Length: 417
Image (cartoon, rainbow, N blue to C red; front, top):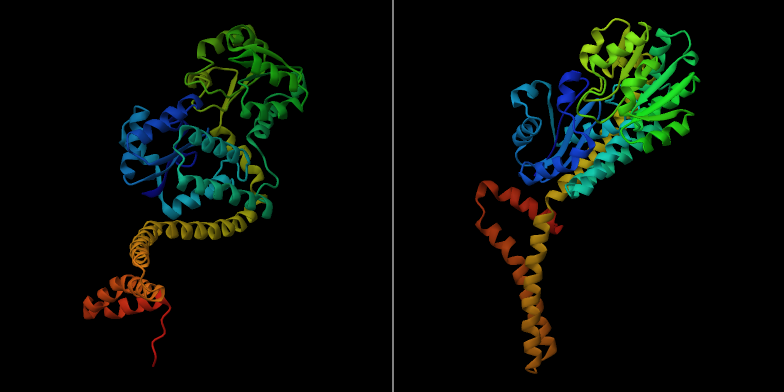
């Protein structure tokens, strides 16, 4: 089995492709089961965020992973291969370390990806698809990410997606304190945005969610009020700023609903940030007058503003990561000899038991203990040395020096001059 990472991200694939290949939370465990049960992988973890979908796995047939991804999402393999990256072994390890450390994120150094990766690992544990190799990989990955964040300034001057959304809103409206803000969803991304917008003291804050209870929990934290998604058609027109991020596989805000809201608003501008993948807002909404619609990819230019100050930390982080990759690969390679070591020990144990039973029978017959011990030690010595001495006697001339050198190294021999 070999370690591989397969995936797409914001650098390799447009939003339209990423949303087709995204896994929602409810589908994650069944997807992991399907991937392993079909024999495509022995171990697997799936990381799916707004910026990336990645499969970390142990497999002997990497081409089957690509076909599985395509079939699962009802796509053709040829349609995703131009956007797909495949990282074997060292590259897979380095990629995992870089992702967790925030070096591969749209927002350089952002910490949210680490939590998302930990959640992906917990999901794989629950699904029973996180084997020994991946468990060790992610255990080390989280340790490396901690080292990078504590030993470098990779997180300094961080401009998050949430802060970028606020910046964009302030370009449209003179003051957020005079606007009504609607958050659709109640997950981590919405919580981050809600905190940033709440700091600007909007006139009114509303949280809409599929379950009213979760909406109420977040609404209490930011001094807002809660509604359900069913209330959106009536409530949409009363809000100036909308930030949405749900796990819905289908759009929450359709073109017709937004058109009706604009008529009621007398065409006052409507600012919408869609952070969901797949998207919560129909793409056609961007064609409407008086609508300013931004997706996660549209925020990229804004978040780059604060990245120059962190570029110096990237080289430091890469040095840490490269060293840790080398250590992990050494561990992986050492694990490859474990079956041989186990077989060697099992073979020696069989010889030991056989000779011990033979010695006990001799003692039971009343034979001299010293002679029994002498026979036991001679027999064990002969059996342990039979294989290497026989091999040395049979080896061809062209290989003899290599075999001799290996025996000297294994047994720490020093040949007299």
